[in-house]
Structure formats: structure tokens, C-alpha cells
Image 1: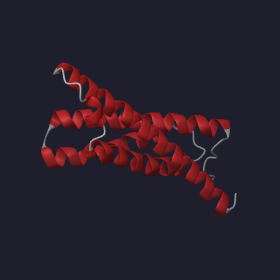
Image 2: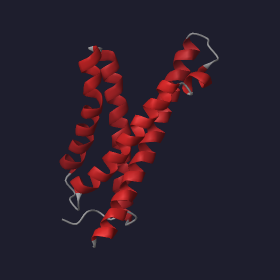
Image 3: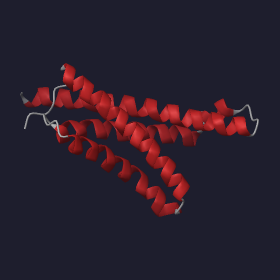
Length: 142
């Protein structure tokens, strides 16, 4: 495959990762805000969902998903190694969450962040794998 075609495939993988990560992050953040506000009988969950910190969180998830998508395509290539694929998900999840632990030393926040990141990158990887199996995104040929 020529260089332009490889770039297009990488862009497709990156956009897929960004969309998947944004949707997963939106689902986790909105459910978290909704549940927290239900517990205290507060009806302002929608305005809290549109808060700048939530939008920043979604933006970071989108950029992370974009970078994950393009990197995942290069990591897995045409290999069917489960450890390689799951290692990529775990590595991205840890890199996304370890700064939380370093700055706040809050293990609860770290655990929730790690769970969200594992979901975020795990679902993105599943979608990317499926699209590569169907030929909609071509794996990187070494």
C-alpha cells in the first residue's frame, strides 16, 4: 500500500478511536453525574453535564481515543496476538490514569479513572478489531 493510502487508513482508525472514546466517556460521565444527583435529589444534572470540566474531560477522551486508534493500528498490524492487543489497551489506560494518582493520591478516583479508561480503550479496540476484520480499516502491513 502506498504512503497516502496508509495515511488514510490511519486517519480512519484514529477517527474511529476518537468517536468510540468520546461516546464511552460521555456515557460514563453522564451516568455518574445523573446517579450522583439522584442520590442528593438534585435536578440540575443536565447543566452539570454541560459544565466546562465535563466538556474538557470529553475533549481529553476524544484526543486520547484518536491517538489510541492510530497507534493501535500500528501495534497490532496483522497479528492475532491477544496479549499484544490487551497490552495496548492496558498501557493506554495506565498512561491516562497514573497522573491522577500522582497528583492527588486518591485511590478511589484512580480506580474509577482506570475502570473508565479500560472501558474506553477496550471498546475502541473491539470496534477497531471488528472493522479490521471486515476490511473497512486495513491493518498496517509491516
